[in-house]
Length: 255
Image 1 (cartoon, rainbow, N blue to C red):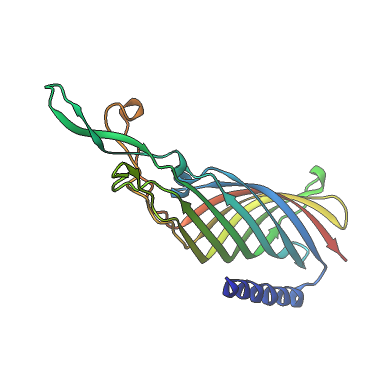
Image 2: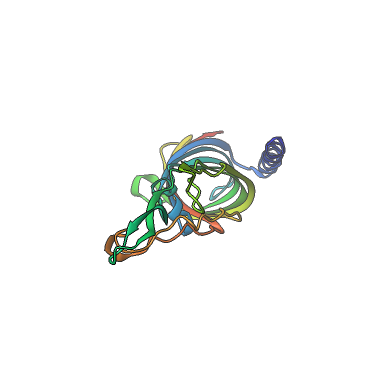
Protein backbone atom coordinates (compact mmCIF):
# COMPACT_ATOMS: atom_id res chain seq x y z
CA UNK A 1 0.00 0.00 0.00
CA UNK A 2 2.86 2.38 0.83
CA UNK A 3 4.40 1.76 -2.60
CA UNK A 4 1.13 2.78 -4.22
CA UNK A 5 1.00 5.98 -2.17
CA UNK A 6 4.61 6.80 -3.11
CA UNK A 7 3.88 6.25 -6.80
CA UNK A 8 0.81 8.48 -6.72
CA UNK A 9 2.57 11.16 -4.70
CA UNK A 10 5.50 11.19 -7.13
CA UNK A 11 3.11 11.54 -10.05
CA UNK A 12 1.32 14.45 -8.38
CA UNK A 13 4.61 16.27 -7.77
CA UNK A 14 5.89 15.69 -11.31
CA UNK A 15 2.61 16.71 -12.91
CA UNK A 16 2.36 19.79 -10.69
CA UNK A 17 5.81 21.03 -11.64
CA UNK A 18 5.11 20.34 -15.31
CA UNK A 19 1.87 22.32 -15.12
CA UNK A 20 3.44 25.27 -13.33
CA UNK A 21 6.25 25.49 -15.85
CA UNK A 22 3.81 25.62 -18.76
CA UNK A 23 1.13 27.78 -17.13
CA UNK A 24 0.81 31.16 -18.83
CA UNK A 25 -2.38 32.82 -17.61
CA UNK A 26 -3.63 31.49 -14.24
CA UNK A 27 -4.28 28.39 -12.22
CA UNK A 28 -7.16 27.11 -10.17
CA UNK A 29 -8.74 24.36 -8.14
CA UNK A 30 -12.01 22.50 -8.51
CA UNK A 31 -14.33 20.06 -6.80
CA UNK A 32 -16.71 17.72 -8.59
CA UNK A 33 -19.44 15.21 -7.98
CA UNK A 34 -21.36 12.91 -10.25
CA UNK A 35 -22.41 9.42 -11.20
CA UNK A 36 -20.59 6.39 -12.63
CA UNK A 37 -22.34 4.03 -15.06
CA UNK A 38 -20.60 0.62 -15.49
CA UNK A 39 -20.09 -0.76 -19.00
CA UNK A 40 -19.49 -4.25 -20.40
CA UNK A 41 -18.83 -7.02 -17.89
CA UNK A 42 -18.64 -4.56 -15.01
CA UNK A 43 -22.34 -3.88 -15.57
CA UNK A 44 -23.07 -7.57 -14.78
CA UNK A 45 -21.36 -7.16 -11.41
CA UNK A 46 -22.47 -3.72 -10.30
CA UNK A 47 -25.00 -0.97 -10.94
CA UNK A 48 -24.26 2.77 -11.05
CA UNK A 49 -22.79 4.63 -8.09
CA UNK A 50 -21.90 8.20 -7.01
CA UNK A 51 -18.43 9.63 -7.63
CA UNK A 52 -16.61 12.65 -6.22
CA UNK A 53 -13.18 14.23 -6.49
CA UNK A 54 -11.11 17.32 -7.11
CA UNK A 55 -8.79 18.97 -9.64
CA UNK A 56 -5.82 21.31 -9.90
CA UNK A 57 -6.07 23.36 -13.09
CA UNK A 58 -3.33 25.13 -15.05
CA UNK A 59 -4.27 27.49 -17.91
CA UNK A 60 -1.67 26.98 -20.63
CA UNK A 61 -3.50 29.25 -23.08
CA UNK A 62 -6.82 30.98 -23.51
CA UNK A 63 -8.44 27.79 -24.85
CA UNK A 64 -6.36 25.04 -23.22
CA UNK A 65 -6.08 23.70 -19.66
CA UNK A 66 -3.98 20.99 -18.08
CA UNK A 67 -5.75 19.31 -15.16
CA UNK A 68 -4.54 16.94 -12.47
CA UNK A 69 -7.72 15.15 -11.43
CA UNK A 70 -8.51 12.79 -8.54
CA UNK A 71 -11.75 10.78 -8.32
CA UNK A 72 -13.17 8.16 -5.95
CA UNK A 73 -16.14 5.83 -6.27
CA UNK A 74 -17.39 2.72 -4.48
CA UNK A 75 -19.45 0.06 -6.27
CA UNK A 76 -21.77 -1.66 -3.77
CA UNK A 77 -23.77 -3.83 -3.38
CA UNK A 78 -22.79 -6.36 -6.04
CA UNK A 79 -25.07 -8.66 -8.01
CA UNK A 80 -23.39 -11.66 -6.35
CA UNK A 81 -25.53 -10.92 -3.30
CA UNK A 82 -28.68 -11.82 -5.26
CA UNK A 83 -27.14 -14.78 -7.11
CA UNK A 84 -28.40 -18.32 -6.78
CA UNK A 85 -27.00 -21.59 -8.10
CA UNK A 86 -28.29 -25.10 -8.64
CA UNK A 87 -26.70 -28.17 -7.04
CA UNK A 88 -27.71 -31.74 -6.26
CA UNK A 89 -29.77 -31.84 -3.11
CA UNK A 90 -28.42 -33.80 -0.14
CA UNK A 91 -31.94 -35.17 0.32
CA UNK A 92 -33.64 -37.70 -1.93
CA UNK A 93 -37.08 -37.21 -3.40
CA UNK A 94 -39.39 -39.62 -5.25
CA UNK A 95 -39.54 -39.31 -9.02
CA UNK A 96 -42.57 -39.98 -11.23
CA UNK A 97 -42.01 -43.72 -10.85
CA UNK A 98 -41.69 -43.50 -7.09
CA UNK A 99 -37.92 -44.12 -7.03
CA UNK A 100 -35.92 -42.06 -4.55
CA UNK A 101 -33.15 -39.95 -6.11
CA UNK A 102 -31.24 -36.73 -5.68
CA UNK A 103 -32.51 -33.76 -7.64
CA UNK A 104 -31.27 -30.24 -8.18
CA UNK A 105 -31.91 -27.74 -5.42
CA UNK A 106 -31.52 -23.99 -5.55
CA UNK A 107 -29.12 -22.28 -3.16
CA UNK A 108 -28.43 -18.63 -2.44
CA UNK A 109 -24.80 -17.47 -2.70
CA UNK A 110 -25.08 -15.70 0.68
CA UNK A 111 -22.23 -13.54 -0.58
CA UNK A 112 -21.39 -9.87 -0.54
CA UNK A 113 -18.98 -7.72 -2.55
CA UNK A 114 -17.83 -4.19 -3.16
CA UNK A 115 -15.20 -2.46 -5.29
CA UNK A 116 -13.52 0.91 -4.84
CA UNK A 117 -11.68 2.84 -7.57
CA UNK A 118 -9.31 5.72 -6.82
CA UNK A 119 -8.01 7.44 -9.94
CA UNK A 120 -5.44 10.15 -10.54
CA UNK A 121 -5.12 11.35 -14.12
CA UNK A 122 -3.39 14.06 -16.12
CA UNK A 123 -5.94 15.57 -18.52
CA UNK A 124 -5.83 18.05 -21.39
CA UNK A 125 -8.97 20.18 -21.86
CA UNK A 126 -9.52 21.96 -25.19
CA UNK A 127 -12.17 24.72 -25.28
CA UNK A 128 -14.05 26.11 -28.28
CA UNK A 129 -15.19 29.69 -28.85
CA UNK A 130 -17.56 31.24 -26.33
CA UNK A 131 -21.28 31.30 -27.04
CA UNK A 132 -23.84 33.91 -26.07
CA UNK A 133 -25.82 31.32 -24.08
CA UNK A 134 -24.88 31.92 -20.39
CA UNK A 135 -21.29 32.80 -21.35
CA UNK A 136 -20.62 29.13 -22.13
CA UNK A 137 -18.23 27.19 -24.34
CA UNK A 138 -17.93 23.55 -25.39
CA UNK A 139 -14.92 21.46 -24.43
CA UNK A 140 -13.31 18.14 -25.26
CA UNK A 141 -11.05 16.36 -22.80
CA UNK A 142 -8.70 13.40 -22.66
CA UNK A 143 -6.11 12.05 -20.26
CA UNK A 144 -4.06 9.19 -18.90
CA UNK A 145 -3.21 8.09 -15.38
CA UNK A 146 -3.42 5.48 -12.66
CA UNK A 147 -6.54 3.68 -11.44
CA UNK A 148 -6.21 1.99 -8.03
CA UNK A 149 -8.74 -0.85 -7.82
CA UNK A 150 -9.73 -2.79 -4.69
CA UNK A 151 -12.26 -5.60 -5.13
CA UNK A 152 -13.55 -7.50 -2.07
CA UNK A 153 -15.76 -10.63 -2.14
CA UNK A 154 -16.89 -12.22 1.13
CA UNK A 155 -18.93 -15.11 2.57
CA UNK A 156 -19.82 -17.00 -0.60
CA UNK A 157 -21.46 -20.38 -0.16
CA UNK A 158 -19.18 -22.94 -1.85
CA UNK A 159 -20.81 -23.84 -5.16
CA UNK A 160 -18.78 -27.06 -5.51
CA UNK A 161 -20.37 -28.59 -2.41
CA UNK A 162 -22.60 -26.16 -0.51
CA UNK A 163 -23.58 -28.61 2.26
CA UNK A 164 -21.27 -31.12 3.95
CA UNK A 165 -22.44 -33.25 6.88
CA UNK A 166 -25.50 -31.03 7.17
CA UNK A 167 -23.40 -27.86 7.55
CA UNK A 168 -23.10 -24.99 5.11
CA UNK A 169 -19.66 -24.67 3.50
CA UNK A 170 -18.36 -21.15 2.82
CA UNK A 171 -15.41 -19.97 0.75
CA UNK A 172 -12.59 -17.92 2.20
CA UNK A 173 -13.07 -14.20 1.47
CA UNK A 174 -10.70 -12.67 -1.06
CA UNK A 175 -9.52 -9.21 -1.98
CA UNK A 176 -7.85 -8.17 -5.24
CA UNK A 177 -5.77 -4.98 -5.23
CA UNK A 178 -4.31 -3.56 -8.44
CA UNK A 179 -2.76 -0.35 -9.74
CA UNK A 180 -3.59 -0.08 -13.44
CA UNK A 181 -2.81 2.30 -16.26
CA UNK A 182 -5.85 3.79 -17.95
CA UNK A 183 -7.21 6.65 -20.01
CA UNK A 184 -10.34 8.76 -20.39
CA UNK A 185 -12.03 10.67 -23.21
CA UNK A 186 -14.99 13.00 -23.02
CA UNK A 187 -16.74 16.26 -23.72
CA UNK A 188 -18.76 18.87 -21.91
CA UNK A 189 -19.71 22.50 -21.54
CA UNK A 190 -18.30 25.21 -19.26
CA UNK A 191 -20.31 28.13 -17.87
CA UNK A 192 -18.16 31.13 -16.91
CA UNK A 193 -19.74 32.94 -13.94
CA UNK A 194 -17.07 35.65 -13.72
CA UNK A 195 -13.32 36.02 -14.06
CA UNK A 196 -12.59 33.68 -11.14
CA UNK A 197 -15.51 31.25 -11.03
CA UNK A 198 -16.86 28.66 -13.45
CA UNK A 199 -19.05 25.58 -13.52
CA UNK A 200 -18.74 22.78 -16.04
CA UNK A 201 -20.71 19.68 -16.86
CA UNK A 202 -18.96 16.80 -18.61
CA UNK A 203 -19.25 13.13 -19.52
CA UNK A 204 -16.23 10.86 -19.90
CA UNK A 205 -15.47 7.31 -20.98
CA UNK A 206 -12.92 5.57 -18.74
CA UNK A 207 -10.96 2.37 -19.44
CA UNK A 208 -8.15 0.86 -17.37
CA UNK A 209 -6.08 -2.27 -17.93
CA UNK A 210 -7.23 -4.47 -15.07
CA UNK A 211 -9.55 -7.42 -14.52
CA UNK A 212 -11.99 -9.04 -12.11
CA UNK A 213 -11.80 -12.78 -11.55
CA UNK A 214 -14.85 -14.81 -12.71
CA UNK A 215 -17.38 -16.62 -10.51
CA UNK A 216 -18.85 -18.90 -13.15
CA UNK A 217 -20.30 -21.50 -10.77
CA UNK A 218 -22.94 -19.08 -9.52
CA UNK A 219 -25.48 -19.70 -12.24
CA UNK A 220 -28.61 -21.80 -12.48
CA UNK A 221 -30.83 -23.32 -15.08
CA UNK A 222 -33.74 -25.70 -15.28
CA UNK A 223 -37.51 -25.87 -15.06
CA UNK A 224 -38.90 -24.21 -11.97
CA UNK A 225 -35.69 -22.28 -11.27
CA UNK A 226 -35.71 -19.55 -13.90
CA UNK A 227 -38.12 -16.91 -15.11
CA UNK A 228 -39.56 -17.56 -18.57
CA UNK A 229 -37.33 -20.62 -18.91
CA UNK A 230 -34.20 -18.47 -19.34
CA UNK A 231 -30.94 -19.62 -17.80
CA UNK A 232 -29.16 -17.25 -15.43
CA UNK A 233 -25.61 -17.03 -16.74
CA UNK A 234 -22.36 -16.86 -14.75
CA UNK A 235 -20.32 -13.86 -13.72
CA UNK A 236 -17.52 -14.03 -16.28
CA UNK A 237 -14.07 -12.47 -16.11
CA UNK A 238 -14.13 -8.70 -16.65
CA UNK A 239 -11.30 -7.30 -18.80
CA UNK A 240 -10.66 -4.45 -19.28
CA UNK A 241 -12.70 -2.40 -16.80
CA UNK A 242 -14.83 0.32 -18.39
CA UNK A 243 -17.35 2.89 -17.23
CA UNK A 244 -18.89 6.26 -18.04
CA UNK A 245 -18.91 9.07 -15.55
CA UNK A 246 -21.10 12.19 -15.56
CA UNK A 247 -19.79 15.04 -13.41
CA UNK A 248 -20.60 18.61 -12.51
CA UNK A 249 -17.66 20.66 -11.25
CA UNK A 250 -17.14 24.01 -9.57
CA UNK A 251 -13.82 25.72 -10.46
CA UNK A 252 -12.11 28.69 -8.83
CA UNK A 253 -9.19 30.45 -10.54
CA UNK A 254 -6.37 32.49 -9.01
CA UNK A 255 -5.01 35.37 -11.05
